[in-house]
Image (cartoon, rainbow, N blue to C red; front, side, top):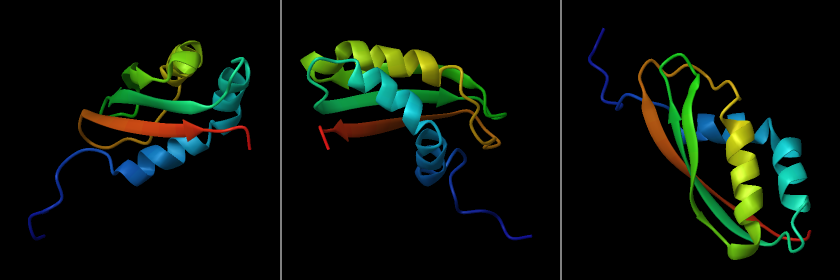
Length: 98
């Protein structure tokens, strides 16, 4: 078997699919905000077996700070696909009234 040139960790597209699976939970947090528009950026630390080691807010629009923390709290309990190694990925989302 040839050596892998792919770095260890989780493909960002896999993280995106895991997050998409919890869209209703995220929407619940965001829609609780008086103004549900803006941007949030999180850091996801995930163990090799897919358990969340920690999801923290890195940036959030002022009006979405509580929503960002709500989502981080929920995301800490989600199960992610195993990646074979510990990984840290950032994820950003823009929210609008649409």
